[in-house]
Amino acid sequence: MKLGLEKIRQRKQELLDGVKGKIDKVKDARQKEKNDKERVKAIREEERRIAKAIRKERRRLAVKKFLSKLYKLAFLGAVFVVLMIFIRVNDDSQPSSVYKGSEANKQSDRTSQKYGVCVDKGIEYYKAIGSYPYLSTGEDAHNKVLNMCSNSSMAF
Image (cartoon, rainbow, N blue to C red; front, side):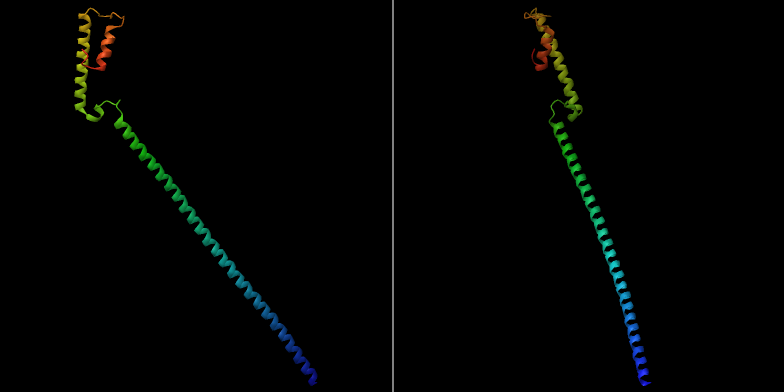
């Protein structure tokens, strides 16, 4: 009977050890699952952080590219304005009144008066020598006078 009891106790202990082993395996599996979930959570958090950093870098690069284009455009605009001013200042075909105001207008009036006086003197000259309205070469005397006075108001 003692043997039978001893065997029962031994069998009971074996079963308890087996159950404890299974419980330990379940606990280990649950701990492993918990650790895996934490790793997955950490990996996802790292992915979010990296994605956020990538978006931030893309925005920074977009702003940098925009500002670069804006600066280039501003620089080209400034160069264009400087060139236009330089061309405008050095353009001899522009009337001087653009730059000198009313003083230039007075001088322009004097110049046109001198031109008119020159034309009148030229016509009188060709009439006095008998070559008006046509010169001996067949050229129109009036056109000749206009051309000469446009070259110099002191022609006649």
